[in-house]
Amino acid sequence: MNKIKRILVMKYRNIGDVLLVTPLLTNLKHYYPDAKIDVAVNKGTEAMVAGHSAVNEVIVYDRSTIKKLPLFKRIAAELDFAFSLRRKKYDMVINTTQGDRGAQLAWISAASIKIGYKPKKNRLLQNIFDLELPPQGLRHTIETNLDVLRVLNLEIKDKKVKIFWNHTDEVEGLPDVFVHIHPVSRWMFKCIADQTMADIIDYIQQTIGLPVVLTAAPEQAEFDKIAAIKTLCKTEPIDFSGKLTLKQTAALNKKAKLFIGVDTAIMHISAANDIPVLAFFGPSGADHWGPWDNAHMESGYTQRKGFQIMGKHRVIQESWECVPCGQDGCEGTKISDCLMKLDQSFIERNIEEMLK
Image (cartoon, rainbow, N blue to C red; front, side, top):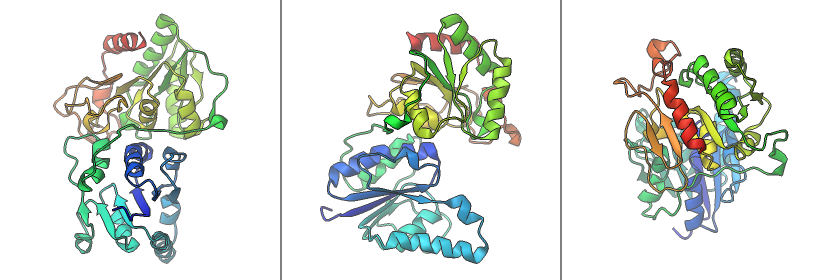
């Protein structure tokens, strides 16, 4: 193991997923201090690991562009990417997500140590991993990423999620004290009712007397969602929607007194910043995706549903029998009923307690 000189960690998922791999990177650097550790991610997620002290290179896979190519050009682009990894001569390749694609890349890499999940579909790839990762079960995603250390028989030294930016990402024009709200997810079925969010904004600005700063991604669907919420507000929040990069959003968030939002990447960024999080969960489970408190080494999310607390963070979720369902809204509507009728007084009580 001491001869490991090059390590590749693959995380071909979404923004939040990539951020939650940072504890693994920190631990790998502890055990292999002289190794070069590269991270391969989908385009648009690279900001989550860029700047991490353990990372040598972030390798970006432009999935959307490659998928648009004609068949033979697409195959050529896929092979070119795969063999570009092989040419780097990795000693250890780690695939931290399930699926055939990561297994294929691990196989083509010809690394002496390959770690990952056994593919479910392609029988030809069933035995390519030297060390197989166990199923997630009811454990937090951070724990499943750290299973890599467990199968290597290495003690876990650190479970802190880390996000990095520099002074050029600092956002000007912010109040000295404010609440950061990111009301939208790219998956709209994770959003709470517009009226509920508007009432939260008004409660913070009118009753508590703190300004609210809004953020959202530069996507039309998110702009429309923000506009609908603001139309229902009696007060005027400060709106940075679509104006910030992920790094800038992280820098803004670090100055907040409290973060309020849904199950999305910005929620994980806030937890990485050690800013208290009040998150609304519907179809997804906090046991897998709840905001992780960096002061803890064990997950506080011991239930599949309902209101839960982990350190400084809180998750509000219904205890309905169908929750969490993992579906894109009720009966394919893209609207989750369990997020539409939340108890406003309960929300306000938690906001007040957290701000104290």
